[in-house]
Length: 157
Image 1 (tube, rainbow, N blue to C red):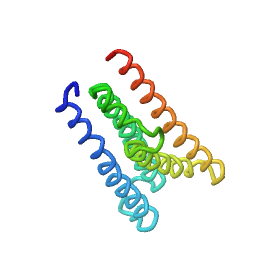
Image 2 (image 1 turned 45 degrees about the horizontal axis):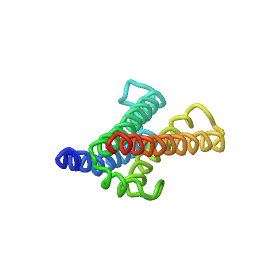
Image 3 (image 1 turned 30 degrees about the horizontal axis):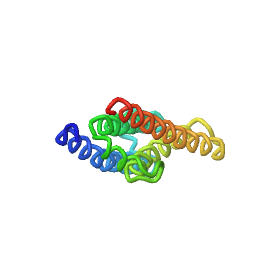
Image 4 (image 1 turned 90 degrees about the horizontal axis):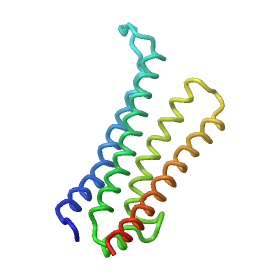
């Protein structure tokens, strides 16, 4: 192991990010539901504008968190020894870190679909866009992690 403390640091962050994002995701959904069902006339801002701002903020936060999780995984891959990298990246697309990455990306895609539903009434179209965003981001992240692993193995030998 190159730097065990750095490896553990990234490992803690990798397991904490999905917890943070799930809490924020649930809060955003509860807030959006509250706006839709219990909107008070005391607000001086239009209900749709408020919903737009909440969903947009959630999309930005969850996209940033998904990318941060990818960067934490990147850092952990680089800080690991060759033997540790082999354990971390096997099997591709079915490891625990991949599922954590996918869960954060899924939450982002759900908010994208909800956000787009404000503008477009075609549920099929926005669902397809949400699935494409989710699958595209997951594949991009996983192939880059595998590429980083190979490059780090090449450099360490």
